[in-house]
Image (cartoon, helix red, strand yellow):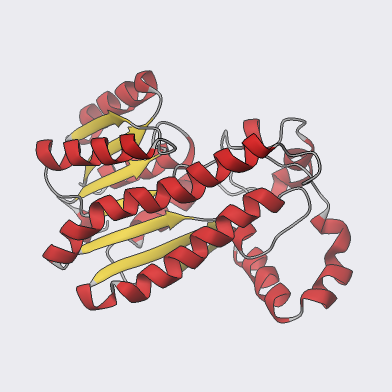
Length: 264
């Protein structure tokens, strides 16, 4: 049990399903109060009711599309007025589309950057002033191993996650003297509905299904790391080892692992 987060207010974007939903439930199990943020009101309402009933903590929800930056400002301002401060922000909202650059549309590019990067930065900026003032808080950004090791057909998605990692690493240094923790979570493929959009043909899921991460396990690891100075969470370990090898010897890695990289 992570007693550090008991009684804390945890806000989670993209919380209506997938890993966001699992993180919300796991936080509630540890006694945290939950603030759910996503676009689907029906799913948010159902999850909020379930959390309140099963875990006896407060659970608020707000309709938020992080792609709409004015909405980000309005919703977080409303949260501050109605609830108060946020102790932990999990920037989880995001999506990907697996496509060669030549086949990817400019709208796909624009939408991925607006959701995965701009929405994440905007949400972070909304909670930082109060965290800095209180000298307490934790920003957790859900990035990806794709932000460390780019592969064919994920160039645009990888670019957004490289941006998230760059932002996260810089932010960590900027707020160090304010005692605010900043963590990036870099998972490989997780068994969630992410791939209904990212992998419409199902080829990637078919190729990597046996290696896909259990979302419940990922959520437990993330929640157990809350309010600790953990810099990165890399899952699974063997995939992160491959990412590290790629950064050290990219040409050799591409030659040896070339066929694997084309699994999409």
